[in-house]
Length: 118
Image (cartoon, rainbow, N blue to C red; front, side, top):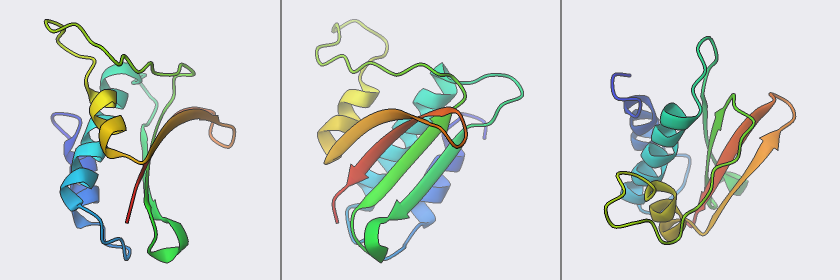
């Protein structure tokens, strides 16, 4: 994974699972969340975790990206025009029907979850 997003893109692009939503939206959301985890949540010796599933075997697509840091991201609704970053979660929030983050107790990782409608 040279740029930190290639694996996520490949998984999202090849995923079927009965979901009939916009695959371009799924690829964009997945790549943004994976890129954020690589950029902001990487720790040497620890893994990032990507999960894709459909709710009820064909409902909404759930994209989970987990990283080992126990810090939550912030969503800047008005990033500065000259800022180099700060638009990824904003883009995801405009596409996803739901975007939130939480600490996964089972693996002790921060997880960002996006839900994409069927």
